[in-house]
Length: 141
Length: 85
Length: 177
Length: 89
Image (cartoon, rainbow over all chains, first blue to last red; front, top):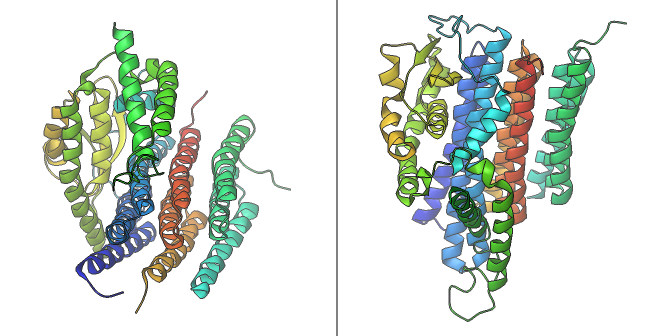
């Protein structure tokens, strides 16, 4: 493995993914309450895993250009689909956890301001989960 | 190469033992269900490392998806805390 | 008329997803052209069309629930793809922001209300996900009648609506409304 | 000179260490949502290590499993959040 430009780029992408995953895990233990922990956990690990996917995509595209076999390209495309699945599901899960925590009555620690406290939300009556699913899929159209 | 794979397997097994002990010691049943979910996640990763992707996909579907859902339905219709003996 | 249009658009969407998933998956038997490994074989296309017809017949009342066909316009999809570029830079900024706060512990959290003035469900969904992925903000709850969002902000500042959502709303309005 | 395969295995090893650290949050978390945050982070890290291992072993099928895994773990998170929300139905 000689150090061409493509190889250096791939290794840099890999290091970025390591750094941000480590940072997210660190933030999970340093921050004081659920909401701030969600900040660290969602953003940093999504970003880190995104860069892991970019690494694999760049690696297999490079091999496809060198070797010319279609299975390398196939791998790049599937990794891209995994990346899209991760990007759609991860913020939605974080939103669900934050909402559940607030409904349970957990106050944000050291809060300066809380507009949601005592606000009367007007939500259509049916179950939230069902509503959310259909609106998401309608969004795909 | 094999050394790295063995190290990963060692880490995953340590995680499995930790989460399995947590399932036993938690008194809050919903926390126990969460720990069981984490345990079956790591078990799927272990199958993946042993190059059995079909078993891993079944473990992911049954362990992480279905079992947690069924346990939560059961906890919802009974009580949340374990009784003291 | 509207029903057949819903059927057709669902069919196109399903076929597109199938063809994207099976791109470069197998060899077409056709020729020795350099593309023969990448494009789909004849059997693959026939199977994709029949599966997409089945999916469209079953799910067109779910996927096109509101009978609103604004997303049939391919220009909107192009804008949606272009939107990922500013989103990516905002995400990068978000991560350095979190890195800074992890190291210094400089937080001042609170929950604020913003009114992004969007009308469609797709737009609100996109905005909520984008807000969750960008610096120091996390969507907690949504008012579905007035389309207002409640945001957990890690460093409360002035004028939340403009500061948090101003960058995205002008992009999202282009493709979702 | 290090090969790429070793680098991918190494990143899976690093992700394994991070998974153990996140499992600590599942134990320690004072409230239940804290534990769910730990579980969610473990999910993302497992998907990342599955992608890395799939690239190291050269099997496209393994990456398909990562896709399925991302979606299924999302469903688990939604179920637990739905329970914690305390709906009557």
